[in-house]
Amino acid sequence: MSSLPYLTEDWRSEAERKLKAELSPEKLDRATTSLVHLHTDCPGGGSKYLLFRLQDGALTELTLGAGEPPEAEFQISGPYETFAKIARAELEAPNAILTGKLKLRGNMLKALKLAAIADRVNKVLAGIPSAF
Image (tube, rainbow, N blue to C red):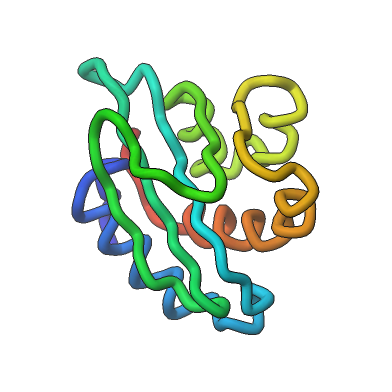
């Protein structure tokens, strides 16, 4: 597979396919939650978001959009380049949050419980050949 431009509809479709194929409800701890990744300072200007919704461990929605993101239980925001480093497996999301490169909004106690799930999702996304 050739590289897909990051944060395009083709990339989102491949991300959804891979997440559904590789992460069973058990691997996602049968979690029910929603999360927005808000990428700021995107190439060409503006911001883009990815909205993930899980119901009983199944990915029910993966939406890509521009501008103001929809409401979600959690929001992780930061520069496009920081998310690109995570997508290239050059940086781990928890480290980015702890060092202030990304900001997390939501219930911190629940976020800690869901950290392993987020790590699994990020590892799958890092497996997508992407052009940044």
